Image (cartoon, rainbow, N blue to C red; front, top):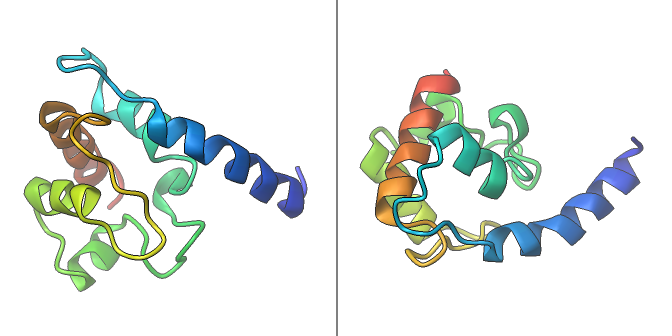
Amino acid sequence: MSKKLLILAIAVAAPILVTTGCSPGSGMSGEEIFSLHCASCHPGGGNTIKPDKTLTRKDLEANNIRTPGDIVNRMRNPGVGMPRFARNIIPDKDAEKVAEYILATFR
């Protein structure tokens, strides 16, 4: 897939993915929730919007993100370039699953 086509696909899909919420107690794994809501901008733990802010432990720690709670806080209060994932989009329990998945997967 060409880079332009990939960017177009992300631009079209991102709003849909961001507004598709998980119900409380969705039963989905952290990986599944990550795939649904995060992977379009963070494929393989990277970052298509801000390449210097990946989900690797090194980059997370450089941005004072060390715990699952820190990741959930960033999901709720993101910086420029990242959509806000409110509790009605990703409930706390599911956000914690995503945070634990990120810390366990992208070393």
